[in-house]
Image 1 (cartoon, one colour):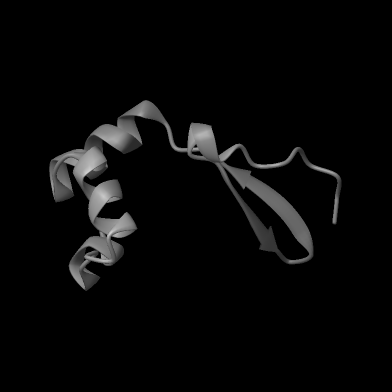
Image 2: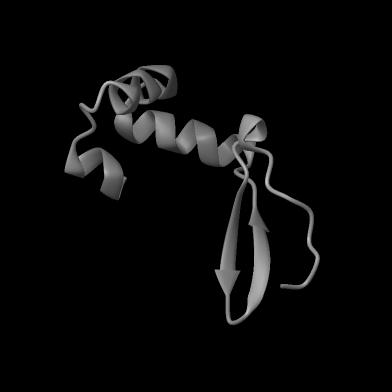
Length: 61
């Protein structure tokens, strides 16, 4: 791909291949706050995901 930096999962980054190019995605603080307001505490979400208890509504959010 285009040599963009690798995603850092500790920072919540993800790399998306789009039209043959890598795009690095990084959530902003405001996006994290908005997500938490919509689906509840993010740490709880991570724990539920790790335990295999993540609901479809949470995936959509």
